[in-house]
Length: 340
Image (cartoon, rainbow, N blue to C red; front, side, top):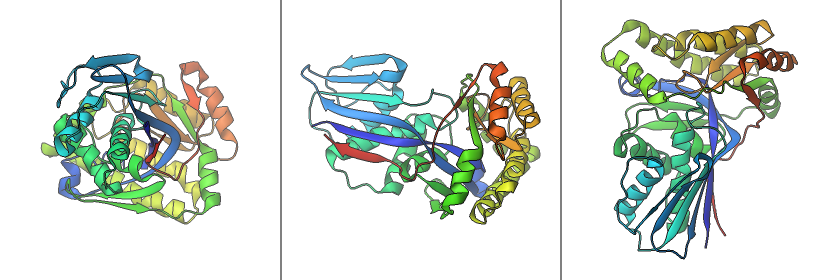
């Protein structure tokens, strides 16, 4: 038997950063995101050789281990090792020789939630193999615990829930054990138009999101008013975005994104930089009415709202920066698993 899974990456449309502790614990966070036809993939398959083989195909990495109940959670492929260790601890895998292979459709550190989505996909493959009775909330929280607690990686919580649930969701974050996912019933023509007008642009610069997120968390702990007020405004932005999408006021999307872009830069240094500011202003000059940096910031993907047919002019204007725009569709389904 071969056990496969895939989980979709996401773009955050509003509220980014308010899902990060301690802000969400103290004030409550809110994020609106949508999943894309870009995925993290995982496959579990039996092998003839003794032991365990981990393969990150997109990273050109592979490691082999003798059978063990715990793999060293350091060096390369720590996400694969972290999920295996937690599954082994909680469910006690019987000794078997297998290969765990992964592939992600976007570069690591690109701001589309690649790491958390990969963790969800790997959990999905193990859940398929072991027939674990885990629902969406269970898997998302499990992924959060593995990444943030077991492995000690800094970050928020939206990615795990977006990857597991899929679709367009307004998410509310409170303490670490309380997350509410509200799927939005947006008219199909509004979604088609949003999809048509959103340009997804990869700056070709990846970044270490953990450092930015750690500073963001410190700013809240240290009660830095500018940073906290920016997060309050971003939480309000999520509410504004939800209302605009549900009521079909798409002409407001660019302005709402622009409002968020200005606020997000106040949360922590490094979220934007001179290159990204240049890209942003160039896109607006070419017809975009607003945009945002995807994920923690500092590089990776940016999105721009381009009304009418302006996305073609915007894409052309950004060619000089050496990045590329990516085609995509919105997808409704979250984590999907199957057996071959």
